Length: 275
Image (cartoon, rainbow, N blue to C red; front, side, top):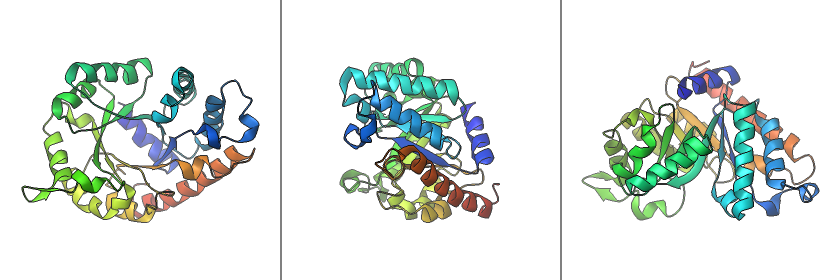
C-alpha cells in the first residue's frame, strides 16, 4: 500500500515535507521563458533539487488549468516524470473536486487512472455519495477538506451545529463512509491549536497541513499538536520553496529551503521518538 511506502519515506528522509507545485508563469525565472514548456522545465528542476528532502509533491491543478490545453500537457509531463523517476514519493492532486456520484467517478478516473496521482483533495459539502467514488480505488486516497486557513473558513466551517463546530461533524461523519480508511484530511497550519481536538477525532489519519511559511503557519505548533506515533503529517510549502529565488539559481535555493525545513522536521520526529 502507498501509505506504507509513505511511512518508509518519512523515516528514511527524516521528513514529512510536501512541496506544492503552484506554478505561476509570471514568476518563472526569465531564463526559462524561451523554453518550449517552461512550466514543466521549472517543475522538473524544482523536483530534482527538493526530492532528497520531501516525501510528497502537490501540484495545484488550478495553476495548470489556467493555461488551458498546454497547461494540462505540462501537468501530464510532470506526473509522468514523477511516476517514472520518483515512484516512491507520494503525489497529491490539489483539485478540491467532488460532485454527484457519476461525476465524481469521472474525476476519480481522471486523477487516479489517467494522471496516476496517489491522492486528490476533496470538498465534502455534497456528502458521502460525492466522496465514496474516490474511495473505491485501493492504494489511493481522498484528502477531505476539514479546517482550512483562509478567511472564509469562518463562513461555514466554524459554525456551531449541535454543540460543536461543523468541521468536527464533517470529520466524524466521514469516518462512517465506505472505505474511510482511505481518507486523509486537510487542516490549515494557521489552525494549529485545533489540531489537538482533531487528533482526538482521527488519531491515526494522515493530515495534510498547508499554510506553513508564506501563509504564516508555525511548523513547531503543527508538529507539537499534530504528530501522532507514526508521524501522520504532511506539511506543505509552496511559494516559500518555489520562489525563494527569482534568478537562475532558483532550483538550488529551493533545495536549500527544503533542506532547512527537513532539518526542522527531523528534530520534531526525534523529539516524538519516531526516528
